[in-house]
Length: 135
Image (cartoon, rainbow, N blue to C red; front, side, top):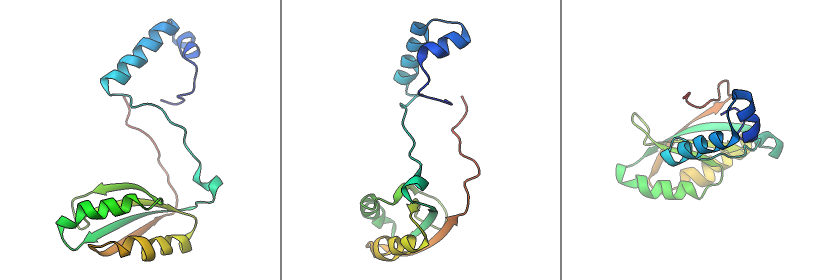
């Protein structure tokens, strides 16, 4: 989990079993659905994206949800979209270059979606924990 690029043989040597055994175990974990692949992680700061925000979206009615999500999918700055309980209908995570860019995304894209009555925005100052569930 720490380094998906670590060679299978290196893992095998460190725990004292064969590379074939590691390969088989990885395939079993993938076929069971526990592992959903591996990926490269892009550092957004290198690309100039420094403002992360979470936006609670209030919809005028619950029926607006599928259409609103369809429109949110078209906005490249939207990284995650969650159907939630509580005050908001939808909670999204967005990544923007700066606060000005965030304001443009809010005013010209998100708040223009039919069914969106209002939004509530929280800017992340610093991500202090970033991890996966332990197995």
